[in-house]
Length: 311
Image (cartoon, rainbow, N blue to C red; front, side, top):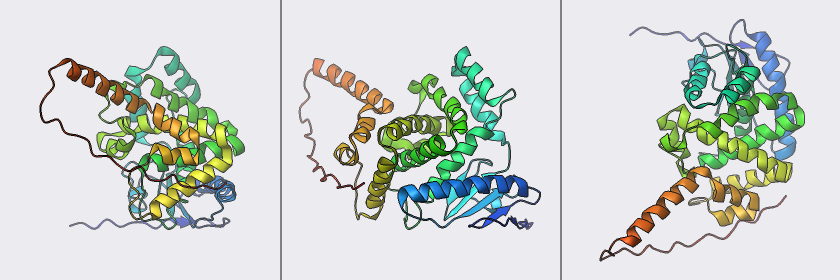
């Protein structure tokens, strides 16, 4: 078997954390490292935790040697290292193309205005870089994520909050792609319920992005409602779940204890509303039919006490 040699990345000095770059990409690495430094300063002040980190800025040739993310150009944080690409990635165009058949002329025009023609999603994925840096605060002493949708919601709050306060010029690029979710064909999605977000990864980026975009919109509402204190309280709640022996599924009561706006997100999650409507229709149909013998009685489930949270 032929041996593929992994070329070493080049250290980039001048930052309070290690920065490594593909040869020839040092200037781009300095730009991204400067933003990383700003994000970490802002987020550490917000969450009262200072993470350990390393930033990898890799081209397509070096990508697989520094991250487990199969899609070149998709920012990824794992084991205290955040890896980002240096430029345009092939899947950016593929992602946009997957939405095009479902978009109105006005939305297509908005995407062209924001990302150019031909389109470049680099500005959007620079915002996702901020999202991934929030995951550093999830991984400092955690073995796993307790609930993917909740962790992604919190990381989106970090992205939204930082951009709104520190780099508002990035907001249009974040919004433009996010709002295609209003025109995505929900009926065709295999997974829609909040707990199924992790399973949506198996169904491809289209289904997963539907979740991600809705959680971005939810994060914007949460940030407007509670700002930094709510961002910190949600982090404390997720952290407590990670360290619990058997946390069970996230409940509405627990979300309400953190903040009523979080319970509202669960109540109004579009996928769950569709599932509930379908269940109601099925129940109505069953009620119209003769009752069947031997119907099972659902076992009562004890609702855990709401967590106490502090600002």
